[in-house]
Image 1 (cartoon, rainbow, N blue to C red):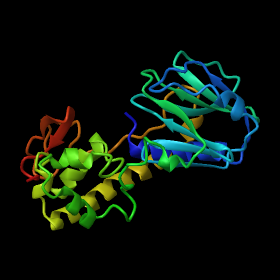
Image 2 (cartoon, rainbow, N blue to C red; image 1 turned 180 degrees about the vertical axis):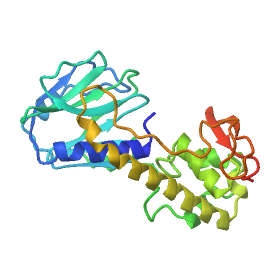
Image 3 (cartoon, helix red, strand yellow; image 1 turned 135 degrees about the vertical axis):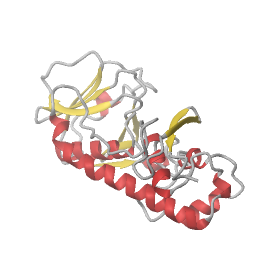
Length: 271
């Protein structure tokens, strides 16, 4: 699943190709994604200028003067910039064709992605209005996280993966941040001190910032024609390394399932 750093990289990658460009046509080959693609955008969006492209959580906004197209990549989606005349594949469900002959193409084999439309403030859309702060913003801080965690018995890993608490701390990055902070993923969120939340905040920001920085080297890949998203290879300490030696203490990395998600940790380094 594309996580926040990948979505941020996608947003940065497509922005120069879309900003200040005029939309020519909209093609909807498969309207039945996670929610139906609104057919009315085929008439409303042509001739509109794209004013800006930005992101909130894992949603990408394509902003025009009459409204905002909201894109979500779901479990398997990816976006590419291709020539409009390039043949489409089986799972290329949506094209935003520009007047310059280029095209933003959504590829989504599992069809859990979304193409939505709003004429209101996109931040007030029902899918986004209750989201937590962005993890790299000043609004995401130890004091706030500490207060939200009081009396919470849920595991710290599930707590920081809750989008109403903070957005974008996906499964991989939660495991990695907890390792850097020295916190066991099963530890109850309400039992963690403010000092340890300070360490966790620092770890989350570090892991995500590094992932976004690494992703920046793949921006050219959003114009590739092979259909492969331009995501990057993460440098991981624990995730996916069950049984391998911890990079710090050499004890084998452990594995469990929390909230139906694979979780990796070191029993020696994380308490």
